[in-house]
Length: 441
Image 1 (cartoon, rainbow, N blue to C red):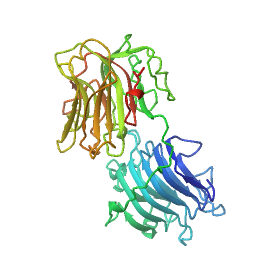
Image 2 (image 1 turned 120 degrees about the vertical axis):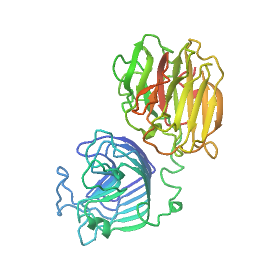
Image 3 (image 1 turned 90 degrees about the horizontal axis):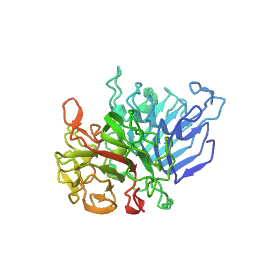
Image 4 (image 1 turned 120 degrees about the horizontal axis):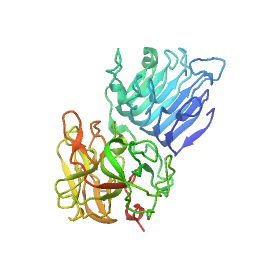
């Protein structure tokens, strides 16, 4: 963007590398723009960035004959899951804006930034919530009522000379010359002053299809279980492909855009699965600011032991997290536990280990009641619903697994495996109902 633009009341998500840069909103050599009341999520690098005096085809150099960046306002923004594949960065970023004269000032106000966290293979400096780059060239900026949580930049133990911060400045001049009011990384922060109006407005259109975050068709053979959306493929520890399938075609197939395959065509299922994510994924956490639904199909006639279908609760997480498992009686249990051993549990009727295909759906609805609500559906019918225990908190040991959990000091996934078949797992970032399920006719 250049100058005098307004970008407001938007959802900006799934931001990849475009040309030479990657940001939900990028202001290069532009002034007096407003970016406000928006949700910016899932970026490989930045949510927002602003740069002045910038040479477009050489981001490492500056040319003062080019326009500066001043008077830009970033306000009432909800930023989550950014800097996923980038080091030496921050979800909110500025560089080359100013000189020591301090005449070029930009404003960041009423912003929440959560989960600036890169993938394990990123070996550069781990990302911060805010990064003000270029020594002595991004001075005198203004930060007002900003809250940053869950930043990987707090752990730089893999680097020599640690910067353990939510907010990082390249050089002390940028940091010491800035103006701060009620910022979470500074003393005296009061979270009550963070506005409840951050993010999209109530006028944002609400009639939109639920977003499918991940979809595992389980049609793979001797490879990792591919996520058809493309982001959350599961490591295959052990399993085989079966020519059986739950429903073909699916009664209510997902209409989303898939990068890999066509889940509407159900060719196979997975037999005796042991699948897991090798990293922590905030998308699969039970938090107070996001609802979700996991659904799929299972088939088993095994009655000798409990069988783990999916979840994040393991020994490695000190048994905190959530899980769906099948009891020896054939009843499904959707069980959650927080770090203080508070629990809630939904249980279905017995007899589901009858060697027939069954559809399940588990729902976390953070908007239902004071502490949210968990729901368990079997074959499209609500089996049980109970009050939740609110936010389970942030814990990187809660890694999503399917068909098995770990119960070993070394984190080996070999406990309570499923003896049977799974098919067509879908994760949605909304609390769905039966009319939205894959098995709805």
